[in-house]
Length: 405
Ligand SMILES: *Cc1c(COP(=O)(O)O)cnc(C)c1O
Image 1: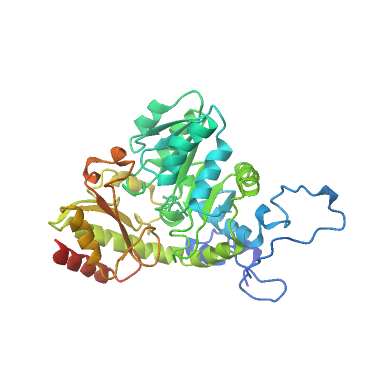
Image 2: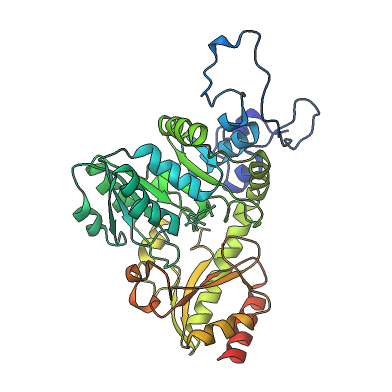
């Protein structure tokens, strides 16, 4: 039976448990009513009030009251994620974008300034580049954070947040988290890191000095492509504010069913990440050797401009560089479509971190094209390498290239 010690990530003699053991046991427990060794899904919207409810804080997230204030399946997943990320607490919300929006809207006030990476998830770009400045009077600067000097140059007296995404979606640019944290802290600002492409198995931003880690749980942490969720892992002082602002009052709560699914998917995170890492590296190397391929961007390749930083950031000896890579083909608009149409194993769809490999053609009409490195301007593929046999994926790519180009 999972003991209380295990729930704190420790074994009987106080030794910290490994990542795999914690991925399995944290957040699980015996159901008090039935003795089931899997926690149930609790779908109720509301919970019984005490005899005298007059002392209840109706915005509280700490007691079972109303599902938007917080619910058991959310809390089990939060306990696991906080431990895996190495933070005091975590908040689990409806999607990765909800986690990004929660962080920005909770921590930034009118007149504050934020610096953010020039490649980020598109919603982060729109929130920070347009929506928050226009609607809420927040100042923002978009910079290439892969060179820390650009962060230093953008700092203003009112800078409150530096937000980086690394590796960045979809260019795979890597930012030095340690250097970004030092610069943010020197300016009295917080550093938030979108760690979705790495997951806490590959990189733990908190250990490198970050204050806030954001994960789209939709991707690797769930891993099965069947539920949306997002997490913010940080200090309790900040999660309390995020729960009050974004969860209770903006309504960004995750559903109990999705929290349960993600908790179940996360059990195999370390096994899956090892396979994603190994397979993506093999495919990146293979693509690099092909004459039809113009360029390959993958932090695990020695040709990647930030390869050394990526290596330095790895959380453990068995970590890797994630499952996503970008590449360009030497062909025209229709050649790209022909290539995708000839793939049999790899599916043409957005998203990443699923069991199945997914490919999407990007860049030709992306509103952020001006921010991408030169080689991305003619259009490129983002390939999210799944868990299929690596040889099958390589054969699928080779066959489609031969048939299409
Ligand atoms: C997908 C993604 C998000 C958004 O997550 P959703 O769960 O789709 O809202 C945020 N950041 C990165 C890096 C992503 O890949």
